[in-house]
Length: 287
Length: 287
Image (tube, rainbow over all chains, first blue to last red; front, top):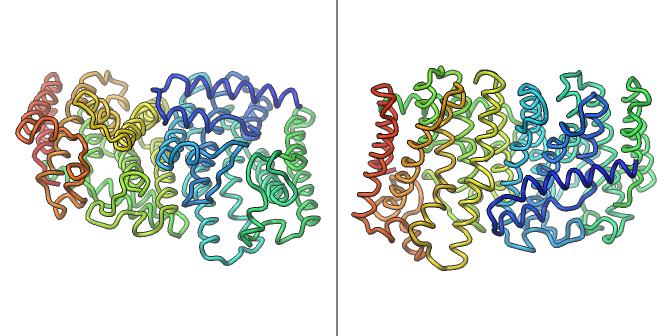
C-alpha cells in the first residue's frame, strides 16, 4: 500500500506538472505550481483506487486524480487567505499569499479551479458521457451546496462566536471536506457508468473519519509532521470533534467510522483491499 | 434589437434565478444572487445570437448564456476585492465585499465559477460531446491562459507602476476580457459542431472594441450610467487605450474594430444582423 501511495503521488505530481508546466511564465503560474506541490494525495489515491475497482485503467483515472488535487489545492489557497482562516504555513511551506501576495493567491486559486474542469475534459478519461458526469459531480461537490457552502458555514460560525454542536459540525464537514472526498471516491463508478451507492456510503464515513482525525491532529500532532499550524482551533475556542467528544471519544468515533467505511465495501470483497488500507491510513496518519 | 436584448436579459436572469434559487439560505447564496443581478448581458447576448446563427434553439443556448454570465459575475466579484482593484461600486450597487465581507465575496466568486461549469453540464444544451466542448473551452478561456492570466498581468503592471505599451495592453485585454467574449461568441459553433473560425475573428475584434469603449467610458462616462466608478484609470496614471491613442484616436480605433468584426460575419449574410447590431451597441453604449 505504501508503494501504491508513493506511485500515485509521483504520477499525479507528474500530471499536475504537465498541466501547469506550459502556462505563460509569471507569478500566477509559479504560484499555481507551488500550490499543487506535496500533500498526502488522499483524494487522488481515492480516485485511483475507486477507478481500479471499477475496471478503469490508471491512465484514464490520472487526469481525474490531478483534477481533484487541483481543486483541493485551490480550496486550500483560498481558505488560507487573511480574510478567511489566515494561515501562514501549509504543507511545511509559507502559504501562497505569504510567499506572493493576496491578489496572486486569489487568482492562482481561481485558475486552479478552472484547471480542474479543464482536466476533466481530457479525452484519455473515457467517453464524453463519462467526462460530463465527472464535470457535473465536481461542480456540485465543490460549489454552493458542497465544499464552498461548508467553508462559508465555518467562517460564519467563527464570526458569530457561537460554537457549533455535533450535528451542525457533522453537516458542515460533510460539505467542507466530505463533498470532495465523495467525488473522489465515486470517480470510478462515475467513469465506468456503474452504481456509485456503495462508494458513496464508504466516502461519507471516510470523510467524517478524516475530519475527526484532522481535529485530533490539531491537538496531538506536530507542525513538523502536519506541515501546518496546530492547536489553532483549540486556541480560538472553536468547537471541534475533540472539544465535543473528548480526545478518547473522538478517537473511538474515528475508528468506528473507519469500520463503517470498510463495511460499505463488503460486496467488493478482496478487490477493495487498497480502499480498506486507505481508511486505516486516514485514522492512523500523523500527517 | 432592443427587444431582443431585453428578452435575453429577462431569460438569462430567470435562468440564473432558477440556478441559484434553491441553494441553502445564507450569506453565500444571497451574495451569489446579488452578484448575478443586472449588467449589460453582452456575453449572454453573444451566446444567444451565435447559437441562433448556427441553428441552436434558444432553450438549448440559455444555460450556456447563464453560465457565461455566472463566470463573468465571479470575475467581477473577485476583481473588485480590496487586494485587487479595490472597487466599492458595481452595476450601481455596493460591491459584494462592501455589502457583506471579503470572505463572503471570495467564496461567492468561487461558487459562481463552479455554478458556471454545472450549467454547462445541463442536458438541455445538447449532446454530451457538445457540452464537453463548452466545458473545455470555458475552462481554457477563463483560466491561467485566458481571463485570470489577463487579470494577473493587469495587477502586476499596476504594482510595477510601469505603464504598458499598446501591444502589451492589447495582449492583456485579449485575456482579461477577450477570452470570455470569444467563448461566448463561439458557443453556437461549439454546440452545433461547426467551424468556429469566423466567430473567432468576429470575437477578437469585438472584444478589443469593447475594451477600448470601456476605456473611453472611464473618461467620458458617468457613474450613474455605467454603475461603477469612472476616472479611476486616469487618476491612477494607468495606461489605457485612451491614454495611448488619445480620445479621438481611441474612438476611431473602436469604430475600425467594429467594422472588422462585421467583416468577419460576411459569409453569414443577413442572418448575422443581430451580431452586427451588437458590435454597434458595443461601441455606442453609454453603460
